[in-house]
Amino acid sequence: MKKLAVLFIAMMSFGLTSAQTEVGGVKLPNSETYQGKTLQLNGAGVREKLWIDLYAGGLYLSEKSSSADAIMSSDKPMSIKLHIVSKLISSDKMVDAVNDGFESSMNGNTKPLAAEIKKFKGFFMEEITKNDVFDIVYLPGSGVTAYKNDKELGTIKGMEFKKALFGIWLSKNPADDDLKDAMLGK
Image (cartoon, rainbow, N blue to C red; front, top):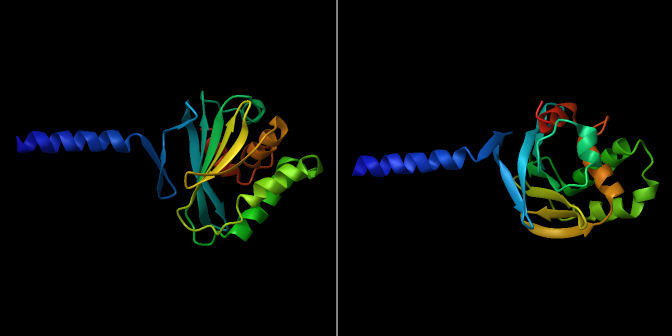
């Protein structure tokens, strides 16, 4: 009977670990559900700068895709999870990175979305520490909702904002080429 119990626990543990993907020393779930919409992990990788891992990032879609342009243009539910893995990340550095990301994603023309970008940067004003988790969720008709450690920070409407935001990681000039490829499952 004891062997049967140990076998049962081992099998349950396997089921739990197979429902996650390890990247950057953290585990990202293989699926997420937001407002009744289940999204699957499309791909995950690590954002690095000067050989330092900053965060693990995962892209979640309703159906797998390796086309960055199609994902950015899609009006379907999707999300990006950012799990902070470095003590070097601060709110100021995250805001600077978001600024740079929008500049690159929008080819330097951020003026049309200045108000939305300012609101989004405000989501990172509270201090950021290692193991904080940000979820950036797009739902058609609702817009982009940001969460920090499962706490809702706010929502920004607009498909153009969603395209620019997801472009930070998926545009032709992404924050990190290797992370882009990993998120696209390449």
